[in-house]
Image (tube, rainbow, N blue to C red; front, side):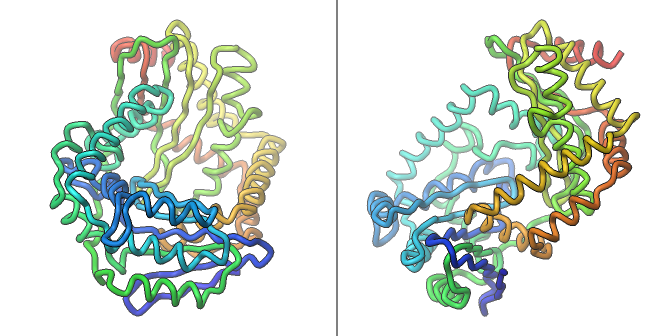
Length: 420
């Protein structure tokens, strides 16, 4: 069972006690991500996340690392489109230290000018790493193709130019607007006592500013485009994106089932057709990303340039068949069992449980038990999946993104040939 509290300063705390384990995973989630950045500050949220590991007024960067390493635990962070999370996994006896350490990083980081200059180089290398990984970079490009210069369409990492243009004041001013008590959710799962977590967080974050800048509701553009990056590679890495659902959409469970049977594993339609039947790809899959106001259903495939038109044609045919013919009862049942099995296996991880609790509060949803989630999966019907597929695949131009030995004109011609 979970417990939930709201501190006097507005911090939300949610925990799940799991007495049979000896560890605790705790996450500090701030409601700020790359979608909250103006174009001129692209990458600032991620830059701040990096700088919080560079030293505080009482600890150097090395001492931060040594403090956590000495417990046998782990300390990390990530920046997404809508959130920034700092998290630790430790033995239960070290939970007070983990809370104090992360609070020190959030409240007392130095943002030293020399560290700032070095970290610009680190982030530049991180950007370069993705530039050299086309099978990963293409997933950023599909967001750009779907939403253009909308904040959701821009890279979380920023650009070489935007990062170089930031100084200490830029980061501190942005942080002051968003790192506040009313924008913080603390989620923890493991061998813990809820009241202790509340006490630890309340004490450690007592000086956190109370009110942060409210997230602006931003208009979602729907003009899908094509984004192509030429690269002399053996494969073309391709993504096709169709408009999806918001994270909290009432039809998200049919979406989970649709995604699973369409491209969610080795038995999926996409994998069976493109790889097992035709031998055109090594990797092919689909996934759905849900955000506050919108979502995107993405299909990925890596294939040789000469097979690009064929792959696009087969993807389109699978979409049309799902819309026109629907799914069989056996296929639906298999997808449901796959989802349920994945859910139950994920709950063996305190980290996954921590994430699940946090997302419920961040998106203002009820915290469902495993049985309640399973019931919602079980209630999905064949008609719901088919209707969702028709609405998603049958309307409008999809977004297209590709990296490899292909031009935008060539990809466009391949797409037209696939739809002729």
